[in-house]
Length: 249
Image (cartoon, rainbow, N blue to C red; front, side):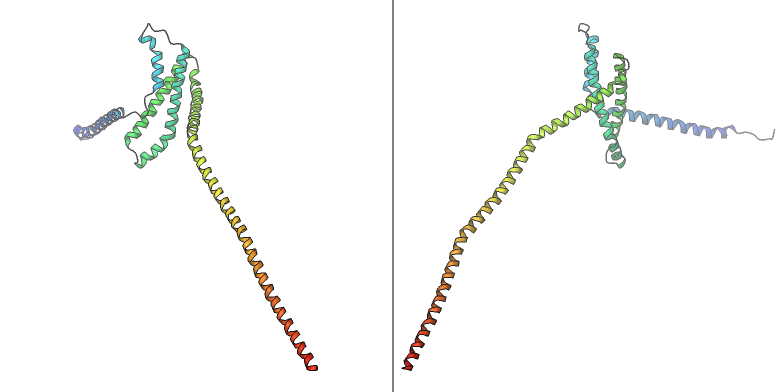
């Protein structure tokens, strides 16, 4: 109408460019996620093997693997599940207390990316483990899943307290020995001071009679000198009197 011709090829070029860019970004993102997932799977687990979980699953499927085996009592299965929840509580506390410090170290570059990925992987595994335990608890008893971790937390705290007390009791003999050595050293120091004081007193007692004897000797010598002086003066007086009387005659 207006005499303008539309060039569809020039309009398609930007859209083709955008489509190619979006497809390349999506491919790159998909490949990167796959590599990260494969890398995280190849990493060493953050926690060691979950032994209580393995025991519970072995007891749960014992009769399934061998029909001749008697069925495991529910009380034993509940105890095994509770022990599994206790181990989960220990691991949850471990992650909570160390994740913040590990994140700070990771941001500063003090630790590698593999350690941080192992921590994140362990956290996700714990979330799945908690859900599985809650479902298993509800299968045994309705609403037990809401309280099983409360009971497990009390048991975990009791175990931690018992470990601390055991550690303290294990160090008692060594600390007692150190205290005995310290007390013996202090006692020897006191005894040495007492011996020195007693030796000084004995020396003072031994030197006191000698000093008194010297004082008496000096006093007697002074008295003798005074007596001699007085005796000499009296003799001179008598001589003068005799001469006086002789003059009168």
